[in-house]
Image (cartoon, rainbow, N blue to C red):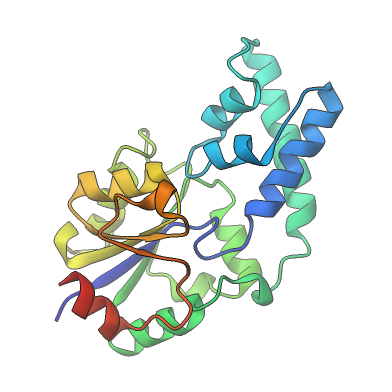
Length: 215
């Protein structure tokens, strides 16, 4: 019975870490005296670090040495905030849905652009629940390319049409659709409206409800 797997994005889907990223970028912006807004942060959703830095700098060219230093500093700020993360910071409905899926033998995967994915899952107490973890170092082409999700599906031994992707970014939704997956968009329709199903959160979501609406 479908789905055979649920594959999640991380930031904003499993973990309430978007504010931590915003605070980290904002602190870096203050360091170098540039403007950074919540709208800028929204543009970064689902993207890898280097592309986020380009948005942060608004296209201003910098040397690779400077780019690496800025990304390292931002990540250090983020990890400082991450120390306070607890299971209470898991997004609503996620734990219940994963528990239900695992009880039915449905596999669980992660397809994230974050290089801190394992650390975040560990802080949330969810690391052992995942059969496969793809992070920002797993594939060469990042979202909106479908590679991270295709990689996860292959490792789980399933075809894309047998899995549901959960995403909160336009880039992630595009990746899931291009890979041939069923896609649930979490959050605002103006961002994830291309998904097969759009919900404000996973709170109260069940496996049977997903089956009825997606298969």
